[in-house]
Image (cartoon, rainbow over all chains, first blue to last red; front, side, top):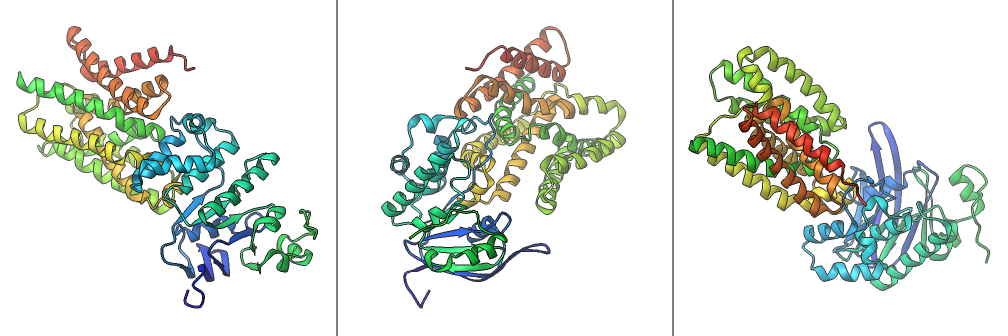
Length: 235
Length: 254
């Protein structure tokens, strides 16, 4: 932290293992306030584990240094909500606000920011569409005014037109609340357009830096183990 | 006569909080745990009867030991709650059946109506108030935990501790119900009112309210029917509750 006061998160030589399985080995990266870090990598490469380790859910070796006063919000991958649960996101937002002792006005402003309606909030969780569910999860994460948001594949359960809308929403929220964002994504077009940094992960660092500098065919092949079929950005 | 009144009041209040505790058990998908957890009290009841100690103290001791063991097993081996409970449950039933004097076994299993002295009534009353306050205070943490452990953790909730608290309150509710429903039937007090509440409502608050009322209605109507027709209390209460559940099935949700 001492070298650069704008650094909000610095990870050094991070190892995470579950019994004998080393899921992450020697992962290092750092980001500054307001940046967008995209984490890309094949399935099983440890992306979700990395996010959850940053949240303190898994034990690790190595160091994770957060700047003082960092509040983290987390948007998980789609939760398979029980269709029969008599819960809606209004209940869940109120629950979080009460646990964190937040004023009721904060719920209202968060709902506005994410563009949710009373109807969506009062729909039982098991009956929400993928897009609405994801927006509700973002509202849940935003409650409590975090300055860093972690997204785990925010478009995984959304159709193609909805994906674009979701990325724009994330970008807009980031600008409005001066958020630092860490986003696990499979979508390289998003990485080129919105990410200021990219971390290529396959249980270890394959590359880290600005997307235009570090993402090339060779790196993507190394990352995914085959010629990349992903969208390539043309300048 | 007063002792009878104490017993009736405590049974009705127990029914009320059972609906609340059962609603969360239903949402956590551990509703059947009520049936099996109650059986963990059996060896304690049996041993207490054998050594002439208050059977409730014996039952409470093994029940709470069993709950802590279940909680530890869940954490240590990542077994699902029901597998862990299943292992302890069968061993408890076997041990309970072996040690409980045979003339007491039927009452331990199926309950009965017994008058209460003032001190037992006050202890029971404190337990009921405690259960109600627990649900009121931890309601939000419980719904976050059952909806998504991940989201709950990201809100810095200690889920393992919360689960232990809930299981202990669950055990306390079972213990209160054991006195008049017995080990086999008390699980019904957890499951059936909550099932009725779920059948009739759409929202969380309505669900909790209707479950509590359904518990109260089952026990009060059960007591009334048992008295009028001179029937055994425990089985009558459970059958009345089952009847109310069947009636609730007629209600078609829109």
